[in-house]
Image (cartoon, rainbow, N blue to C red; front, top):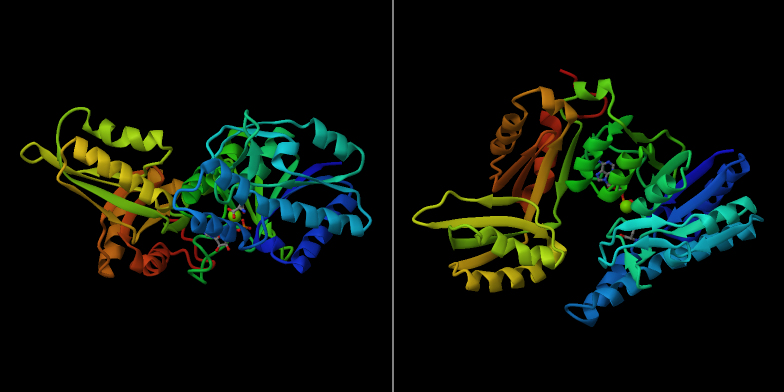
Length: 410
Ligand code: ADP
Ligand code: ASP
Ligand code: MG
């Protein structure tokens, strides 16, 4: 008997009929003789509706109450799925995060999981229950509900698989695996049979929202093999796992894009020690993550600084930087919300040169201007005007030979 963790995302539980479909899949796994823990998301679109309600109510909703609100979507799904399983004759029990309890820190809307109590779940499994857990939510040390950030149900699932030492961790979604790029943008994208944790981490953090980044961090840390597959068919999906020898032979495994960042530029910043810390410390105290940073070469004692932040934090960040810029006597600040980051990712980059220049050349041939660049050992990212996102992804996908069945090994 194996312990199987299955996670079903929003589209997979998007209607009563789809929840019935999930119940059939779950019950089959149970009938095959396994213990099953199911983690579910809110029904498709529900979390967005809740976020919109909070924003309609006030410009800066209380972070605690925001989490109380947005966590409710998952509670609906666990109850409906449990009811469905029960009506099919199975024993099933639903759990909100606090009932497990899944303990987190208090960083509302981006909380980190600290520990998972397994006693209650293990007892229920032992007495023949299918355990149905609300993804995306936990409880902090003060008893407040805290959510794990958008897409956080993936992290709930991998953390439970790691914490309870599951034998199998399956993430069911609306595509049948990880593709070379978002198949909704490039229909020629190819499915990868396997991908290393590091590549998946880069892809997730660079905008490929098929898995939440923290879920991949957990998987890597605890060596959980994650099988990403479709809830609508039985095709084998993609295994997210430890790097192996074949993976290095592929130069670029994936192209990602991210339209969820905004750019802030601070002009004529006095160039002296401590200024960067003056600008960035208040942002980090406000829990705002800064991504790419560019500082120009100093001229006559002044420099310009540009960086990106999540769009959801843009208003808050702009206000903070506006105040700091007055304090440090910078000339002015400017924001731009219509940017996109396109990136190429691959462990093969470590051992091959010329990949970044091929990317720049491909973009320039289409007349796409590169506003910012950042690189790591296994990725190159460029900030461009958001209106060119789809075009950039398409031409890069073609330039690196990633079309269906054509992944090039050079
Ligand atoms: P769920 O609701 O199941 O969590 P998500 O919408 O979070 O599903 O993730 C699945 C979506 O991720 C797909 O529909 C696809 O459009 C998108 N996606 C982005 N990049 C990729 C990729 N490289 N491979 C597969 N899917 C991707
Ligand atoms: N319902 C949450 C969201 O839409 C969490 C998830 O689906 O993973 O972000
Ligand atoms: Mg998701």
